[in-house]
Amino acid sequence: MVAASDPDTSITVLLVDDERTLREPLVDYLVGQGFVVLEAESAAAARSILRDKTADIALVDIMMPGEDGLSLTRHLIEAQNLPTILLTAMGEATDRIVGLEIGADDYVTKPFEPRELVARIRSVLRRAGRNHADQDDDDAAYRFEGWQLDPLKQRLTDPEGSVIPISTAEFRMLRAFLDHPRAVLDRDRLLDMVQGREAHLFDRAVDNQVSRLRRKIEEDSKQPHFIQTVRGGGYRFAADVTRVRST
Image 1: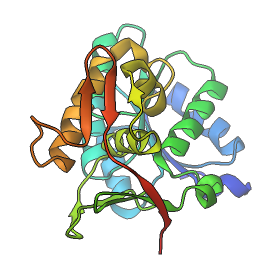
Image 2: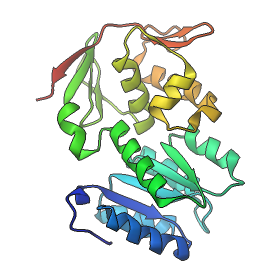
Image 3: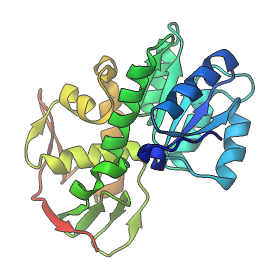
Image 4: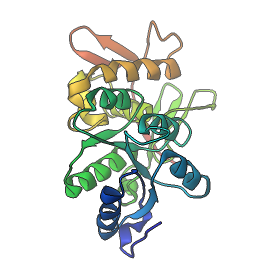
């Protein structure tokens, strides 16, 4: 682990890449930008690190010996609920699509500018509600027809008070709808809000995420009450939403 003394050290980045010539300079750069960095050369090493430490975001290389980055990303999202950015090579378009569909937040293509990567990290953290500097503006919970979404804890509860497990991707999608109740949101706009600047290339990811989210909040996902399909337009969240301060 490498740490810095800057005030941003509350943000911890897990960097997983088997290529030392990329990993080590990137660690130095991220530390210089004020991040704490947990460094892993493989998926196995990353899993070991996370048994004892926690991270706010992961940067994961897709192509690694042993367990690949897509398998690790699925684990980080499903088991750790960890926002993830994929580090990809130019020829890995199919893998990028798969990564976004399983819930990765964004990707950068090697070789990349470290400044762009840092901008992506901060953008993902803002969308995930984990940028500590922005949390004072984000602590009001969303309520709709007995449901509640707490943006700080990233916790969804149903009208009976039961906690409904929700992934980071599902949280971002639901929050986009709750920020724009009753408005028609087309796929391009939803992708821009929840997955990053280049995700419009893969708009089928929106339909997959909406389908998963419907299974969490709809009584009948085939006849949705909340997230309605607008023919030729996208989707609309068909309920009133209020904001209340979390306690």
